[in-house]
Structures are given as C-alpha cells and as structure tokens.
Length: 384
Image 1 (tube, rainbow, N blue to C red):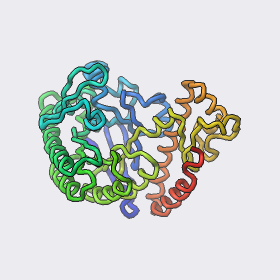
Image 2: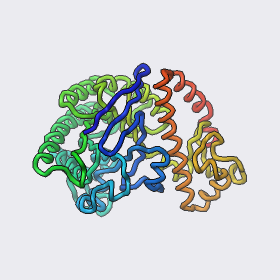
Image 3: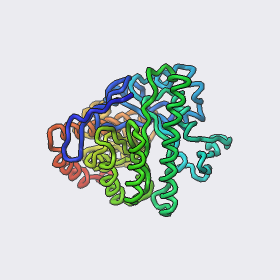
Image 4: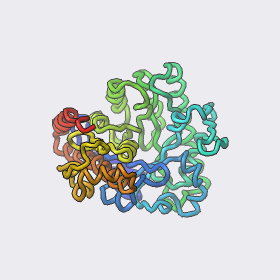
C-alpha cells in the first residue's frame, strides 16, 4: 500500500511524497505515458535520467496486445518493460470515451469492438481490476464511465452515478482477488486502487461524486472527465471546486491534463499527479516546448539556425544539437528526430514539476506561477 506525506503547502498547492514499495514519488509529479508498455522513443534508462519517478500504462491496450497473461508469465509489467520504478495503469475508462462508436455501455460494464481486428471484448469493473492485478501495477484505477464535456446533463448524471457504483465493485473485486489468489506478477502487495470523480462541469454532480467516493475510503482519488471538450474556464472552475472535496491526506490525480498552464493551474488548486500524451505526441509532430512558448521545428525558418532549441535548457538535445539539425532530422523523417524531440519535451515537463515543487516548499508558488505563465503566455506561439 502507498503512503502519502504532504511536506509543504502554499495556499492550496502542496508538495508531497508518495511512498510505494518500488520507490518514492515526489509530487507534484508528471507521469510519462507508456500506453503500450513503452514511453514512445524513450528507453527506461533515459526516463530515469530525466528524473521520471513513475510512468503510466493502459489496461485496454495491454489486454489486447500482448495480453495480461503473457505479461504475468514473463514476470509482470515492470520486468516486461524494464522499468524498476512505480507504474500506474489506467483502467480502460478513457477508451469507453475515445472509442465510443465501438462501445456499448451497460450497468455490467463496457462491450468493445476491438479497434485492432474488430473482435468483441468486454470490460467490467471486476475485469479491469483483474487485468491490472495480473499486470502487477503499483497504482490501479477503478473503471469509470467517461462522457464528452458537452454531453447532455442527464448523461453526465447517469455516468457519474454509474462510476460510483463501478468503483464500489472494483473495491470489492480487489479485496476478493487478494483474499483468494494473493498478489500477482511478483508484486510484494496488491496495487493501491484509486477512484475517479466524475460529473462533468456540474458543481452538484462533482460534489455528489466526491462525497460518495470519499465515503468508500480509497487510498487515492483522481479527477476525471476534464479536457474532453469543455471550455478551459469551466475546467479550471471545476478543478477549484473538486480538489478541496478530496481528502487532504491522500494523493489527488488530475487525469489527462495537457498544456503547461493546465498543470500549473491544477497544482495551484491542490492536485499532485498528472499525465498526458501531449509532450510525447507533440514531439513526434515537431512541436517542442520552450520557456519562450511552443516552437514548430518543421518551419523553414530553422533550416540554417545554429542556435540550440532552447538556450536555457540543459537537456541532452539542447546541449548538443542545433535547431537546423533538429529540423533536418524532422524533414527527413529520421527516427532520431522523434527521440531527441521526445527527450526534450519530457525534460521540459519533468523540470516544470520540479520547479513547481521548489516554489511550493519556498512558499512562493503563486508568485512563481504568475511569472512563469506570464512569460510563457506572452511568447507562446511565436515559433509556431
């Protein structure tokens, strides 16, 4: 089981440490996304070198290929992918949303038509827990029902209530599986199971969801259902409302938040954990994060530019290569382009979390955040 210690506060922002059997996670923390048991273009050693302390895997995708039975037989997800530190696995709830045309949701669970070969498969709360147990993850997520931000209020109410009922089933399933079969994949103990608060941007639904899930006493809580089509101001208002409803002594995980300004706003609201595909996906598409805003390396203006990508960045990419070279690699579709760009973007995100933590500990988070966002917002897009 995990233990979470809050070491410093600055208003609602907090710096903490999550203690797990596979190592400590200093928060605020960004989790690089390794959907298919790999953070695209990066080796585990490179991720450790960047300071990543936890990565994310995906239940749905790993269930399809290669299958949790294969991973379990090979020693669990950590050994399979060569990652020694903690892993959080998403439950597949996001795929209920992203593959909506291939999914039918009932009270029992979700029935998918596989996006790979069209085969039918079912994912229930109990099944999601069983798969994550077999993978051997350190933190497992309850299966939730996620709907679009602009979905009708009645659908948000239905999905939020179903998410609570599914969370109770996940909790019972984990207790039952641990009691009958012990832990899986060589793990020293069962995963910590996090519940997910839903409710769209409705204050009433968010309060009800949080209250009901807190009453079930999970070791951690996530805020889901944001960054799925709702206006940004509504996202920030919902964050400010929801985070304080969750236990102050337990970790709070904002799911899927992407841009730097979203992360810093969420930290200010009291969130601790984050994940998003943007730094890695944007890197592969030539969109790179700098303190002067995002820069599109594919532009012709960089064809003969001798400057580093970001003169203030100490990452391997910026220390050793010019914008001209990075543009050349991208233009020629070289594999090294994806690797160098991804390394830089992940360094940017992980460094941002470390700086935010330092500001919280120093008691100057709000001022630091305003200054950082002021410079970033003033220049962001200049290189696009």
